[in-house]
Amino acid sequence: MDQLLPTPLRLRKVIAQLPETVQGLRTEQAVRDAVAEVNDQVRAWWRSSVGPQLHVGLADVDEIVAGWQASRPAAVEPVAPPPPPRRRWWRRSR
Image 1 (tube, rainbow, N blue to C red):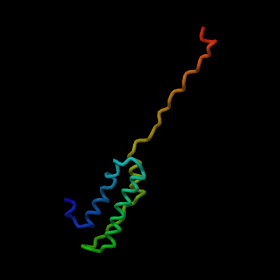
Image 2: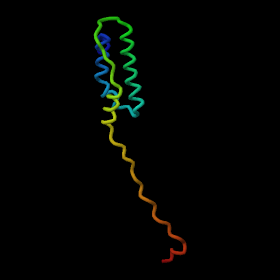
Image 3: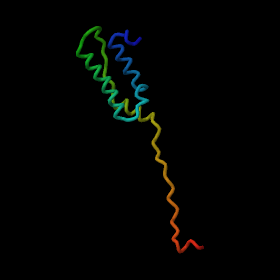
Image 4: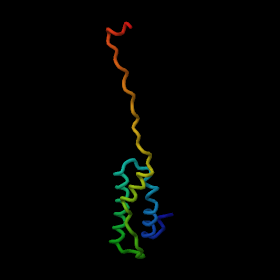
């Protein structure tokens, strides 16, 4: 149904949904690429000047990435316990 919207309204809707859209992405670079793709669509719309001329702004890449990072759980690396000390062969008889 979104395809029936005029291009500027569809682009505004895509930009508004970006924070939810990028939640499933695994890397920051993938998030940046997704935002860059949307921004390229907006720039193409600016150049085309077909249809109603409604202002459509670019999505802020850093804001979207910051929101994506804030929603991610902190990566905590599990600390492995140190290996038990090796007992020498001459001390095994005790």
